[in-house]
Amino acid sequence: MQTIAIIAQKGGVGKTTLALHLAVEAAGADTVAVIDLDPQASASGWSDSREGEEPAVVACPATRLNVTLEAAKASGARFAFIDTAPHAESPALAAARSADLVVIPTRPGILDLRAIGASVEIANLAKRRAVLVVNAAPQGGAAQEAAEAARDSYGIEASPAVVRQRAVFGHALVEGKTAGEVEPEGRAADEIRELWAYLRQRLDV
Image 1 (tube, rainbow, N blue to C red):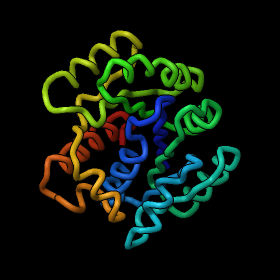
Image 2 (image 1 turned 180 degrees about the vertical axis):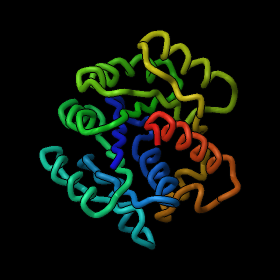
Image 3 (image 1 turned 30 degrees about the horizontal axis):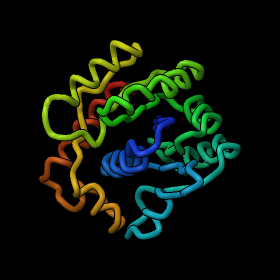
């Protein structure tokens, strides 16, 4: 089982949205689990309103993370996505240590970019590979420029796949779905597919 931890010490960067969309994309071909470490349990709430069993979403405290991941592996999960809370260094570190790859999402705004360092430090402390994903980006070329600037500042690989700010992401989650399920041929679906293909390459699967 390959595990992806999605961490960011700054709130509002779309960790849960990204985790759920990537999980559903991966679940099209494999059994997938989402581990919800956020006390707000947004991912679990989404799952409660969803029709169907894939992906499985399990809420647990960080102290139970290893046990929960072992259970997911025993149930046949090929991929596990760990959704974490902001401003929670210890759970984020536990998630990073349990992961094969750490994904650090950020918006391209200057305050968001300045906050990346804390998450990079957590990944480094856990001795795990980390990649930066520009998420909820406005239209235009500034998003890729921001990713390149962060890469140069923090020495972290930046995904060439950028996820733009689109209303369909929020609307779909309200219905217990994802953007790709609501608009399979839309640009939002394409962006998630591109990002997942990139992350799979980083995982060598």
